[in-house]
Length: 77
Image (cartoon, rainbow, N blue to C red; front, side, top):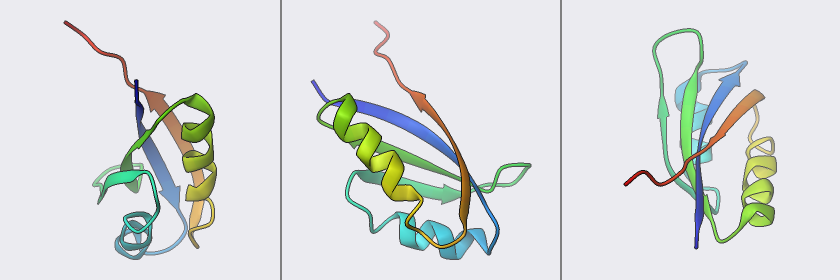
């Protein structure tokens, strides 16, 4: 079963530029700039937790990403 998460992203450059790059990364399903204290959010998915960790780590390869806060989602019936 795939694992998904919402990742809040803080950055030190224009969030629209960061989001454009986040959208090109493998495992990033969606990314959007935000209004408010945090700059962006990325919705990610991977086949398992190890792979999800690799996706989160890859977010830091994007210039301007300074901090992430990952929230793994859970199914609710």
